Length: 393
Ligand code: ADP
Image (tube, rainbow, N blue to C red; front, side, top):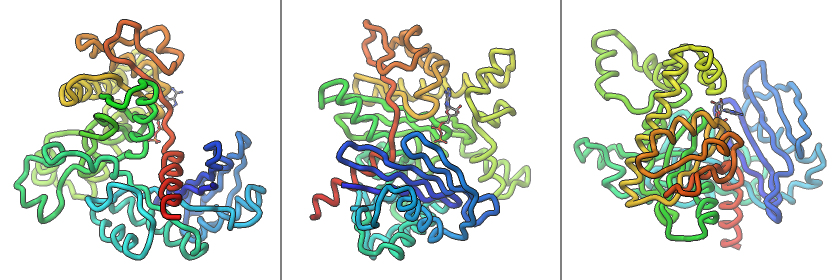
């Protein structure tokens, strides 16, 4: 079975085409700058990279370009070789705890959820509608970022707000990065060799979140109603006192859109360091004595460690901590800074092997395994798409 996975953002369209017999990506592409002058198509075919400047006015154009690249590069002769299309959709609300075959009802629900994910669901749906227009007969599946966390219990997903805000307005924790947490937790369960397991998955990229996963099910996660909650991220605040925006609005004249911009794009590692969101550059600067760069990295690590301790208690023990995504997979200095906090609870990092990004980074006598597992959200979406389409056939 061959599956095309699409991740359609506001100004970009990322895609990967998989041969699921060996779970191999035959081509991946990124149309970056949809509707802008600087639009480019970047391709990667088995490690061979190619980049062209192009004009793409909207998502229909971008999807058409993605389809054409499959033919032009000889990946398919005919579009009928695409067995299904899997779409990343950020918000499935409380409605979807599983992937779903896309039909008119699903399209309406994704649309109804625009208010909860105004930056993500509209471009996600634009990608779906473009595919429907161009190739209406190919089955399409929506895989939701929020779905994996729909197993949270009310005590985990409710905020300490009047209950009516949940009942009337669906204000609750949803959690994100679902396909990544699912992919890496399933991989960790295989490495542990037991189904009954207690795992904390740390997806640490520019966007970052943790999940507490018990027997394969998410029981808590750090992102919340939106992806702003939880960890300090590349440019996002993570948790803060909810009075801060009120104070800024009432006493300092901040407008809502200014605060959205501040909290999402100018805070986190970038905001604290006043330098960059990139942990490599922060590490280099910190080693040279830049105090704010060091502070930003220390704050990042401390917050991750704080949640690991809390989640270990909620899980009632812990078999493994898994590090993943750009920072988790590569930044040995962040893993070390996090794990330095965890020694008292028996999580022992092997400082030497940690530097070479091994699969197992814990010491032999550590009570908890530390794994480093590269995430693959696209493959997870392809797997879930395949499973659903096969079930329906
Ligand atoms: P996202 O997909 O959320 O944009 P990524 O998962 O690509 O983010 O992670 C980006 C982060 O990973 C950056 O802070 C970057 O510094 C870090 N990173 C990427 N590669 C390396 C590396 N080789 N060593 C250390 N950090 C790295």
